[in-house]
Image (cartoon, rainbow, N blue to C red):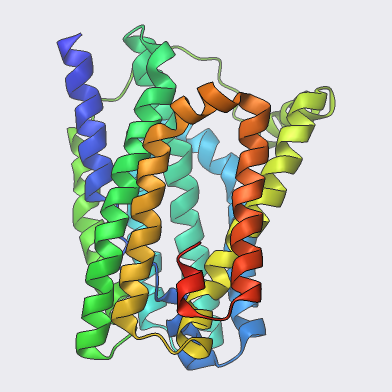
Length: 306
């Protein structure tokens, strides 16, 4: 059990070392400064999500074949490269390419971290702790990102350069990726099918034959669109419409993430009180309220509701 605890702690350290997103409040502002067109920025981001859709299953297959650590390392390196090239970009096509690299990194990270934790817990016969471990890892990630946003705000405020948080964050992510070598590859036997079409066919069949899965997928799509719209326009709205400074934006983003970390830590207790269905309604309600308040009250104080 001690060995298991050490392996999980090393994963938390890996998450902490790769969760210092200085760029988070400023990536849209950096693209907007150079492109000066919200539609073009949306196209750039569409390239990110199109790449995610196309690479997600292949990235999972590579993780199955070559191991979770390989997927994590490749993901972190691509992620760092994507963030760096985004920070160096000034033209539309450069943003497109960098965002595709960035998305590729995220695909491998997503395909590596959750399966790594689950397989490790299966090997340790502690898979019932999966939710707790992933919640803790997410708290670590959000706490790291909260600190990073505040630091990023200070960097931009001091330097006047929106690209600097991206460049610095990419170097930190590259160094942080080396912590993957501290992790131990889980040894879990699993049935492997390396055909893309086979995996896709099985996945589609499982979805269409389960009403519950269809409902949850639709729920996730709707709620993610809401969260994404906020994330995409928030910085530009805060800077252009509310005339907030870069340090203020960084601190506000830090406060968003700090609150998120606290709530994530309490998530299981909240769900225990509300139940699963009411918890889903609660998620919709909080997003709706924050949208309505920001729409109706065009004042910096309204942003706090985010």
